[in-house]
Image (cartoon, rainbow, N blue to C red):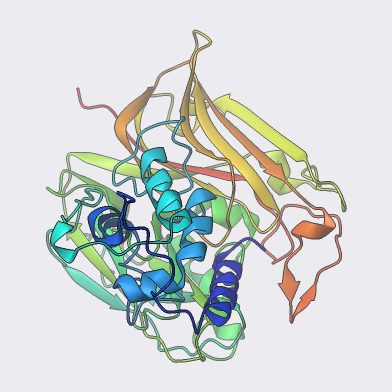
Length: 443
């Protein structure tokens, strides 16, 4: 399984092999690239936020000694673009808060390692600005999740049903931004937040009650039925270092939440490189009771994949493609819209996914192209420039799966034998979802 679990495992192996290595290796004095002048600014703007004391990164990168010990691992991860965990293809579109490294930055780190990883002079250090991300201007509500101690290793997925505090008919509210506040940053890997409207509350409350302990186990999605997954509202996703979802910093845009709803938060815990511990995370929300534009977060998939067993991924096949296209205005009431963000959702067999708009003149605008899908790093990508989807345009979704032996997950330390996979909520089921947010264009 290509996820943080295996990234962390490789990290531990490198640490073990280099445990006795100190920064006294070959120091190339006539080489111009040094840690303080060139590499440290990159690491601090992209990596240290997760790779420091108390955070989820399996090793620390807060100084030269720490970085030198894992220099080969750093090189391998950035050259392969596994780290930083920004998987949107650069040749598709431009996004707010892009955390990826440029080819030039990757080349700097590669050459630094290959030339002995010289330290250089601390006086040469100049801070490099990180990605500019929108942030919450205030916190109007804090919704605490139950206290929970994950036990599944290396990964544990748990869904929590959280009360929405507004229940009266006249208490309609709009979420203009949210973020997850991890209670235990060492084990909270990522989170996805859903809105269960009043008509679905009983479904998820019952599922929560049927399982002992706080919350209930969930992997592919929040559970329930496949029909309820489509009917649910989506707030968005959060991962370490991300800002959560900020629909509007000035309260002009927001996602509507009906009174009497519940918030379903799926938390992914990773406890490969740390001992099991207790977590109590919370959801911090920016709210308003009136907006100029209502944001809709819409999942997108072929109904036949969901309602029939048409989406079959045969055991042993390593290149299985499913595509779907339909006029995008089908879900927007026949009105043209402005697309604000894009995300993809597959499970463990996913290899590549793409979401795009095919315009009525035949041209195509790429929204999101993830060429190396990683189930462990799901996030929402906010478009720098909104895309207009007009009448006659189509929303196109494509997913490619690998169900070969070498791409099977490990369960209880044993690699799973390939089996035919279909659409579903279980661990070994699959999904192919495009998720996009939109608003009606302002007159």
